[in-house]
Structure formats: C-alpha cells, structure tokens
Image (cartoon, rainbow, N blue to C red; front, top):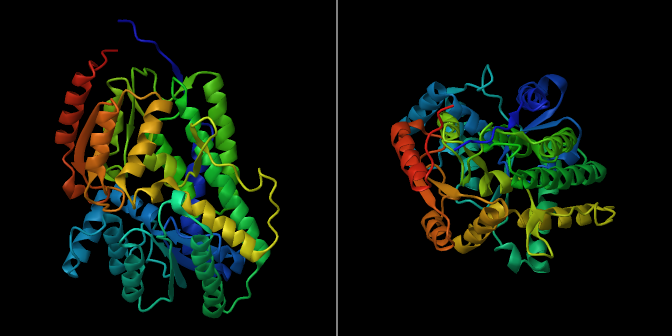
Length: 436
C-alpha cells in the first residue's frame, strides 16, 4: 500500500516559545533583585488577581515546574527520595512531591537555591491543592497562604449564588493581598489581566480546533511545549500575544498541508498527563504513522471551550468578542469566576460521565481511530473515573488502549511494557510499523 507523504517543518515560533518559558523562570528567580514580588500557586489559580498588585509580580506555578523536574530524572529521583525520607506517602500527587523535594533540597531546577515566594495564592478543586501549599509554606518557614474553594459543582449547574461564592472569596483575597504585601490594589491591572486570560485560553482552544484537519498540523508531544505557557501565566499579555501568533502559524500550516509527522496513517488521542520522563513513546507511535492529535488534558487544562449552536465543541467566545465592556473590579471577578468554572478539566471531578461525553465529542470531531488512556498513578484528580471513561469510549465504538504509569515518578513507568501494549494496539487496528 502506498502511503501518502506530507511536508513537515518545525514551527517558526518554536524557539520563541522556549525563550518565553525560560524567561518566565528566570524572572521569578530574580524578582527581588528588581524590587518585585514572587508568588507560588497552582496552574489553575486565579493568577489575574495578584496581577493587580503591580507590573512587577512574578508567579511560579507548581504543576509545570514539577513536570520540568520529572523530565530531569536524576533530579526528580532525589526530590522523591528526600520527600519519602521526611515521611510523606509515595502515593501522593507526584507533582506535589517533586515540588516539595525541590524545596527540601533547596535546589532550583533552573540553577541556584530555590527562590522563596513572598506569598502563596492557590485555588482548591483537586484533593491536594490547598494541602500542597500548606505543606510548602511550612517547609519554607511559614509563607502567607490564601486559597479559594472553587468546588461548586459542574458548570451545567452553576447559578448566580455559586458565582457569588467565588467572587466573595476573591474580594476577600484582594484585601488579604493588600494586607500581606503592603501594596495598594490596581483594578485596571486586574481588568487587563482578565482580558489577557480570556484571550489566551480561548485562542489556545482555537489552535486545538485546527488539529481536526488531516494531516494534523501539530502533534501532542509538541503541543506539551506550547500549552505550557498558559499553565505558567494565562493572564500574561506576552503569552496571550504569543498564542495569537501561534494560531496564525498553525492556520498557515493547515492551509498549506504542513503536517506534524510525514506519514499520518492513524489518528489517536491520549488522556491526562503523560509520563514526562518518557515522552519518546510518542515518537515510537510515529514509527507506525500514528499521531496523537491531542487530548482532553492538552485541549482543556488551560483551553476554555463551549458547546456551539450546532452541537459541536469549540473555543469559548470571550467577553470582549461579545462586546462586553469591563469597567469594575466586581464585574471583572464575576466574568473571571464564570470563565474558570467552565474549564473542561474541572467538570469530571464531579462525575466521570461528564468527561466521557467530552472525550467522545473529541473522538468524533477530530476523527480519531483510537484512544490511549494513561492509568496515571501520579494524579488522583485527573485519573478519577478513568476506568468508567474506558467503558464509555468502547461503548461509543472506539478502540481503547490502556497503559500504566506515573506522570512525575519515573520509577512507576515500564517503558518496554508500554511499547508492548502499543504494538498490540496497533495490531488490533491493523497497522504495522512503517518500513520507509
């Protein structure tokens, strides 16, 4: 059988993405040298709110930082071992353990000692979110910490009183930020940061939509290096501008059939975080002509989506696109609360069927041939109900492969076993390794 060959090339903005990421971590480390403030929290925290304290506020978000540690297997192992020596259980979130280990070792992944934050700013939906930063605060000698409870139920049940619950906590948080830092809060900076967040998270979803095309212009392994900017600071104007630049380039790739891989025989999606120390498994899939075009995790961890009138799933329309003029603190916070409560990855904390519905939509719209589920022992939150998701996907008519591992603890991933499962899965799909 003759296999079609597609043109491929590296993204022109690839190096810019890497430079922005490195600058982010250097800015955090050197913030005090320039009179700025540092804060630490989760990738889902409301980063637009501390931005109201000034233009010299620098965050470090725990999950992407810990994923970076996981990619560095030697450092990750030392982090894990020192945390276990302290008595923390090995079945806790592996991101959290990598992060704590970096604090205990007093080593920063990007060189030097671990830079202590001035305050911690978190929200709580996963079971370990607030506890993560409570322990981190204790390990660092008592850092002021504030956390917002966002677990009000799935978005299809959200009413005004649930929005009020979040907004009242946000307002309390702004008072706490002023008291903790001694700075006067600037509502204009808050409004601009909210606009940046709406823009970056919607545009990322639009970029993912472009992967419906065959050949896919992006592969998931590459997408991990791109979506990460939104996990670092989705409220950043610099990052929002980059996503618009990236969208234009990916659209150009679609129009000119520039593919992620030269031979697209099979279209797959994955699920939850990958084993960061073993991303080469995606390159192994490519030897079969199989491309992972994304996942609910890659699309929806930061990307914000909505159901369109025709029943399809698409990027959520921003308040600015609706012509809404944001003029006050409370209005900005209400929009920010509503926007975040619609995050796809927040929905399935309440019921696995909500996740299954979204995954089936992706499988249909992105025209998938199969699905890979990572039984990820490193993340209780995003792996919740994954066996039920498997059954629902099979019932919907999609072949499903499962493999076991851990996103952040390389000791719990068997590379040879995962490859053997991929071999068997490809065989069930009738696909053989390419001899090209």
